[in-house]
Image 1 (cartoon, rainbow, N blue to C red):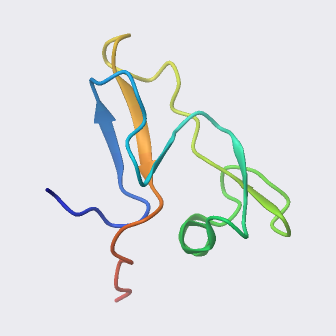
Image 2: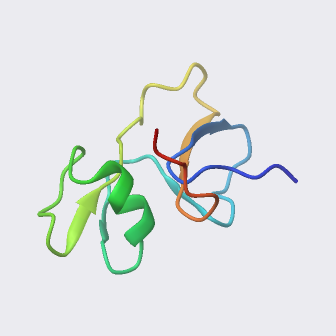
Length: 81
């Protein structure tokens, strides 16, 4: 199985969100539960930065209606340059 970096966004043809991923639907999620992802994307997609942060909203941006984007929250932490 491929390993993903935390914050990788991939396009899927399946009808479900796989383990270790969240839908790119603009949802607000708790920082306490997704701390690693928060340290990488912060509040650039919304949230108050204290208890919540927003996921990217890519709904409607799919090249085909049957596809959907997801973001990895549990994987390798990308090294910083």
